[in-house]
Length: 66
Image 1 (spheres, one colour):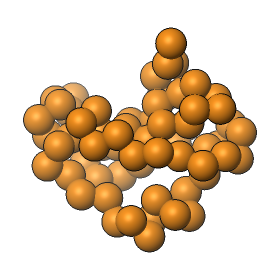
Image 2 (cartoon, rainbow, N blue to C red; image 1 turned 90 degrees about the vertical axis):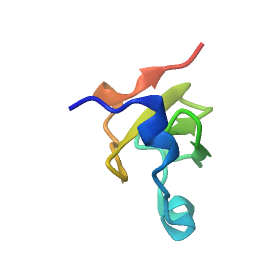
Image 3 (spheres, rainbow, N blue to C red; image 1 turned 60 degrees about the vertical axis):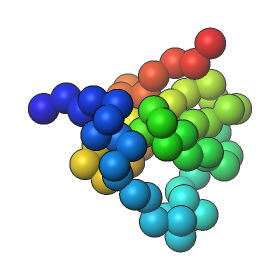
Image 4 (tube, rainbow, N blue to C red; image 1 turned 30 degrees about the vertical axis):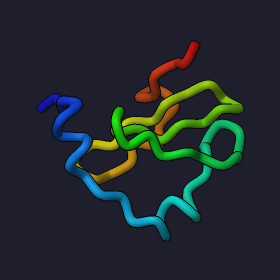
């Protein structure tokens, strides 16, 4: 099942979860992009998807940022 942008906007991520999650590639901090429903690693230039409220922290599943 693919997630649409609208679905992503309705999902709330626990702020405490965001504080402990790190990029699996760099070990750096992540930023939450509510509109896209992704966790962004600026160092790795990757966007990790959030599906049904669950962050998918696999580099193979991440979108490469420009």
